[in-house]
Image 1 (cartoon, rainbow, N blue to C red):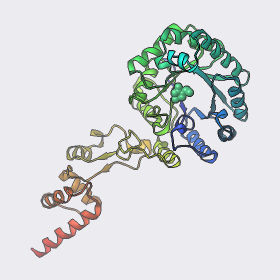
Image 2 (spheres, protein in one colour):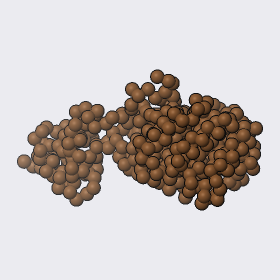
Image 3 (tube, helix red, strand yellow):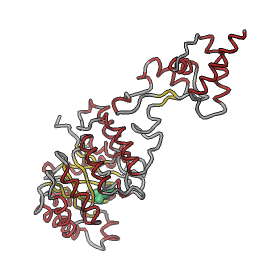
Image 4 (tube, rainbow, N blue to C red):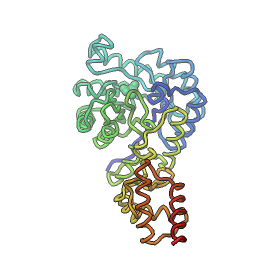
Length: 389
Ligand code: KIV
Ligand code: ZN
């Protein structure tokens, strides 16, 4: 099998930062960039340098401090954008310019009032211009998800010929189904004669909740870079979630793909991003949600306590989570109750638990979660009755 390394292109600081309320200052961006480098991502998209002096400064500072990670700046297919990005990226050891243009008919007609031929020409000129400043030029075909495959193949062939090292196939509107997105990547592999000269990148949005599935489908069909964000942050419903794609490839290592991400840092970094961007993580979010390793129903708790693998496919420490949790609710069973009593210092027999369980259910029906303080109170009352009898 060909090398299965999948490059992780993190765009938390660019697409993620576009989320209303998530704006970061330079100091915050540097702190997150350092944490992302330590996580082991291959490329950090640090910002859109022409968009504001603050973003220029952030990209420039990040370019100074990154040791090994490629630092990328976004541009439109506009000379001035490219020159400003090149200037911001000057201190980077590994600079990349990410330039591109909309290729779907929606973009060509509504946004640019242009023609397919003219768009190819603008794409080629942008890549050629960027090549004057850096070797590593990534081209994005915005709204590739809704771009006719034949035309997309022509665009991609032309930009690779112009020097693009990476070709990004964004499903900008999160429109594609996984098999359609995978077929699009396969189509490019089979119909772009010079495709072996570039890496194909997936950049999927989550409007239909399919960003992760589409990115994985892209990889299964030949893409070797995934653009993603911590906690899946990004425009509208977000981008592909970094922690999800990394863990899918790890969990299914038999497929032959891998990333260089240190998975133990996933939960700490998720918390750091959530705190810094002031954007809470939903409790049931895969890998990093507070419920990702919680078990609350009696059937699950009983199985989990016998062997954690009955209900967990990932060990919490593998992704830096605090540990599995047995949550006591009205749906919990006796084994979970006995386990929790034991954890807080009470050794009860089966008969004791039978009596305590009836009491437990009465309390559990009145609240969402039974806490240790409730158990201590139950134990005190139970022991007092035992002494009295
Ligand atoms: O979603 C998108 O198409 C983008 C491009 C700018 C890469 O974010
Ligand atoms: Zn995007």
